Amino acid sequence: MFSLNGKTAVVTGASSGIGRQQCIALAGAGASIVLIGRRQEALQETVRLINERGVATGATAHTHVVSWDLTDRDTLQALAAACTSFSGGIDILCNTAGINHRQAAGDITYESWDSTLNLNLAVPFFLAREFIPHMQQQGWGKIINVASLQSRQAFANGLAYGASKGGIAQMTRAMAESWSRHGISCNAIAPGFFPTELTAPVFANPEHSDALAQRTAIKRNGDMQDLEGVTVFFASHASDYITGQILYVDGGFTAL
Ligand SMILES: NC(=O)c1ccc[n+]([C@@H]2O[C@H](COP(=O)([O-])OP(=O)(O)OC[C@H]3O[C@@H](n4cnc5c(N)ncnc54)[C@H](OP(=O)(O)O)[C@@H]3O)[C@@H](O)[C@H]2O)c1
Image 1 (cartoon, helix red, strand yellow):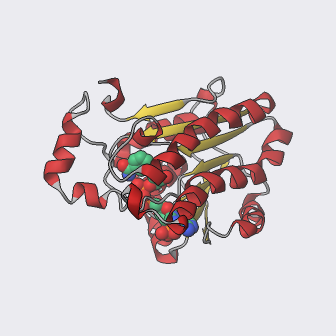
Image 2 (cartoon, rainbow, N blue to C red):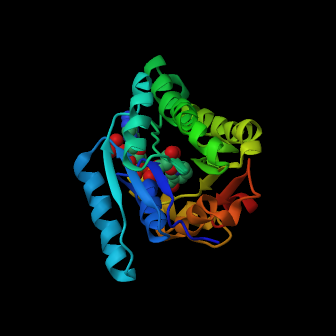
Image 3 (cartoon, rainbow, N blue to C red):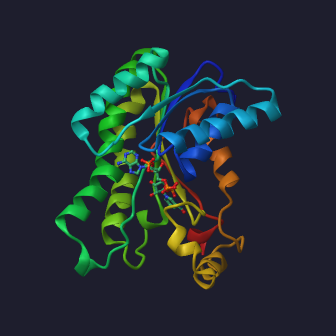
């Protein structure tokens, strides 16, 4: 039920943090992986980690690195073609690349607003749309977006980021409305606080990160491995009747 043997997954944000962990999890479940990010060396490091896990588990992963800047929307069609050339068809898309400029409302510029809303919200839609025809044709596919605590509540200096993540939650439901009749599940993972490059400013202040941990029911922030099960679940047949959902992987932060 959780096997991804024979499936191909595209993961954006594969060069670090959550996207990297998703690559390791999906490859561990048997998927071939197309890794997207700008930093070639960091993408290769993810491949190394995938193979390291494979040595431990006896699995052999097929990987394909595509170094690409997602901000240029005019090139997304070409990117999709580059991904598809690896395997013939993409079964799973993890829309994980994202940025957070952490600006006070008064400091937000048109440029910082646009770059946030473009990468965090527009790219997940337009990239997903490129892979829909193949998924539709085979009657099965998985779109996995990344939402946030800021999809439902406001944090300081999170206005543009929160707008993008509120949008992701609603867009996930709208994707389900558009595409799930063709067998395509569209869901979002909403992580609590996980230590990545994006959240480095949060974890650089132990008092602040400890206070956030105390706001969870479990009384700790996320470990990267906490994201593996949910990723494989949303990517596999195990979740075939689940769509349009936002699953908070937050230690109960939003339960309190
Ligand atoms: N960490 C958390 O606690 C947390 C909580 C809630 C939601 N999230 C969400 O999780 C997702 C991943 O975040 P993360 O924490 O893993 O952050 P991260 O470690 O900073 O990773 C961000 C990824 O996005 C990629 N990226 C950024 N700009 C790009 C561009 N122009 N073109 C292509 N790729 C680009 C980066 O790759 P390159 O730099 O190589 O291009 C990197 O792989 C984001 O959507 C974030 O909003 C994270």
